[in-house]
Image (tube, rainbow, N blue to C red; front, side):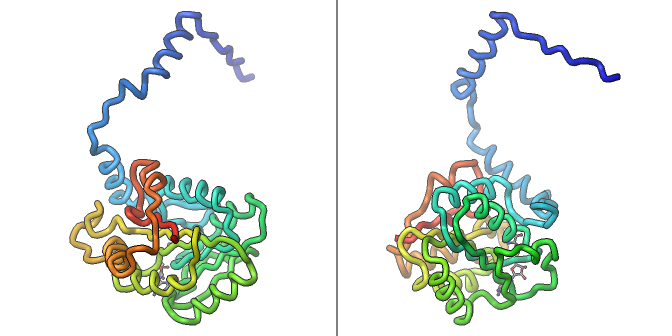
Length: 243
Ligand SMILES: C[S@@+](CC[C@H](N)C(=O)[O-])C[C@H]1O[C@@H](n2cnc3c(N)ncnc32)[C@H](O)[C@@H]1O
């Protein structure tokens, strides 16, 4: 028979100490300024993100970013989620799960150049449209335009396909006429090329955002509070709200 666990109630003095330590914690904590960066590097370089699953399907994200996306989706209540870069489909399924909980009509469009790795568990999700295509082609723009008509409302877009600067810039330009005021654009993996991971990787999403903003400086406002909320993100400079 399992032994009964008897909870010890704290004495009034013990309770006082607990409350005081809780209240004082934010003031006693002294940041060195580098722990978020170090944790980010640990997170990336141990490849824990490659062993992260959503409902059994690999999802190559930082979990704090996923929490952030959930909060954004609940506030934004989009009717369309567009993801470039499906891989196994864990992230598409995650977006559909969150959207179903929000409870309004929606669709998730997830585009990948290959469905070789698409997991059948994800494939069965009735609210995700998986399309096998390069992301930066006119047919995908047409599909987004059509889905906007079928699912009127806000759009949440996330770029997570080919992370070269050239490709990401082409995706951002493809989306330019498709996104409207208040829509959200998340440019993932801008932490590559030394921001702070894989220095020397070469121009990637971070540099694409810079190049885009040089050409179109008034298109987006940076959602800096969200970007900074959890200390580190795989999308530095990449939380963008369409003006
Ligand atoms: C980082 S993975 C996506 C991860 C996924 N979103 C997740 O969170 O689990 C990148 C994917 O982009 C796809 N990809 C590469 N180049 C592409 C392109 N030109 N168009 C569309 N997808 C592409 C790859 O096949 C790969 O599955």
